[in-house]
Image 1 (cartoon, rainbow, N blue to C red):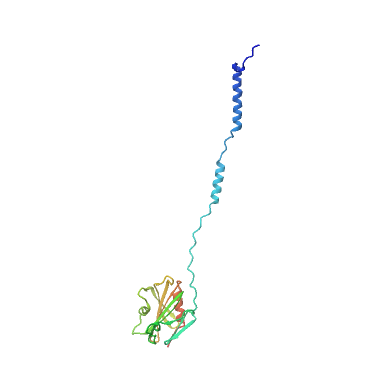
Image 2 (cartoon, rainbow, N blue to C red):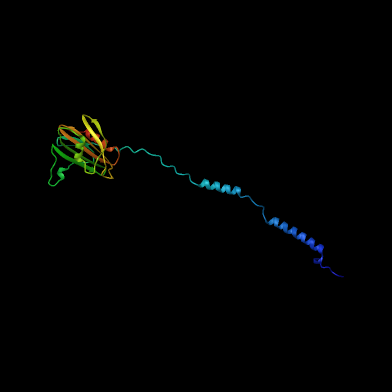
Length: 215
């Protein structure tokens, strides 16, 4: 009896190939997953990223300059035939008395000054001339690098007709200055101050002159 080799039978080979192809197709169908759309995942990631970004910091709103810090004008200097107010923690010194040799002020003329870390004050007086120019009187105590600024303001403080004007700063620590001049009892007076805050010079001068009197 002769046994036939099935691999030599064309019909067997054809059927075997068909079955093999079907098996491979089935395996491929189970191994390869269907394509998945990444659109929703990408959109969710973008949304999460945008949500994590901190909001932009708003620019600070402009603020008004703080009001001048009040300074107590409680003390009074009385000498040379006049009295004037000055801050409590600031002592007025006769400039002439500090010289060598000393040349203290007199009823006719003199210069006072006082200072602390937050204020500088200077005052001068002299016998009045035939005419009164407040800006000329102010220059008695203006240094070479100090200049008058803005307009000359006229103020009535009690019975004193006072002229006031801003001046250029000479110190970064005390950048705001003012000076005033007035007459009383046949003499010309001038008062200068430097402060750390805008608006303080005019206020301090007014408070000092409110306590002023002369003989």
